[in-house]
Image (cartoon, rainbow, N blue to C red; front, side):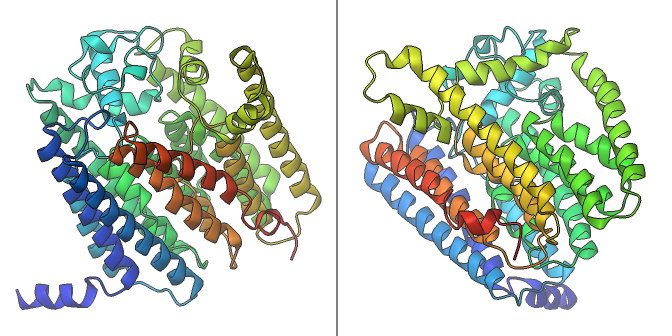
Length: 474
């Protein structure tokens, strides 16, 4: 017993950034249960903490601890004196994981959508073409916008979340916590593999992979399926560092089959190889062939339960483009351009599409710029960061905090101080307020104001030290 007490004293919260990660996790957990007991439901949309005075008080506390954590996180990495033992990280992170395991949905109903898709699959529905959420146990929990929308999640994510439906439960809360066990397993794998990556590299931002709060709070706590894909992705990065290119390709395939936007990471091993030099063509060819083969084999195996038509997997992209509410950089530019246009609705889609193609053009220009100015040590990391950021801001449908969850997997490879880290902290801080707007309730005037203001600030933050972030020299 004395040994255990001594161990805890030595490793428990010995750094302020870990202390505030604890506090954030605990405050959000408590807030989720306050929501449950005052709203009498685990549904998030159209159900709020009551009375309004309590809702505003909860908002203020979360906003304070979140802001404080982001300030401490920024200060910690800017000091260049950050060092943790593996034991200290592991102990503190597992306590945060335990806290978030017992956290209920507070900011988003998305978990009920993926649960509904998984149950519908078990029922025999063609979820990528004709999904009917009314036939599931979660019809009253899903946002009405998504109740009949074809599945937006990758087949691996949907199949992973099928497990709860092999149990005959009467409670939605019961299904939720069985699913959460699966997220818990993913969080543990992510933690252990990330600890091994930290040991394998020596860069200023290596600890960010675990200290970045969104994978715990949004991934595990709010059960966003990004964590499922991120777990496969971090394993792929681990094998990339170990030069195990076949295994890297296999786990990248699984990550993409969880969330299609992770396809951006397929260029990461190629840029990594290009940077370290030596037998580039040989290993790039091995990786490329392995990736194609794994997509054909693993993709077929996982897509077969859903549809024999491979094109069905692209239905979610069409659904998101045509049915899902959108507020990207492209949409904001299109709205600004057409604000005085009397035929706004018929022209809005074309204007938005135009700006999204402009986004793709920006990505292409950045790629060419990299090839011309490839001498700087960190140029390859900046390139993929630039591509990822541009894709999110120009092409993704919303600025949502969990979309940023995988950014640290790129920033950890930066070998010297860079403004990309500061930009990520700013974006992470402000994007979280979009979730807090949902906590306030977007039908409530303060929630509407916060949603608009946070969106505008996120767009403006894209231009923070823009030249410095994208600069390939000096």
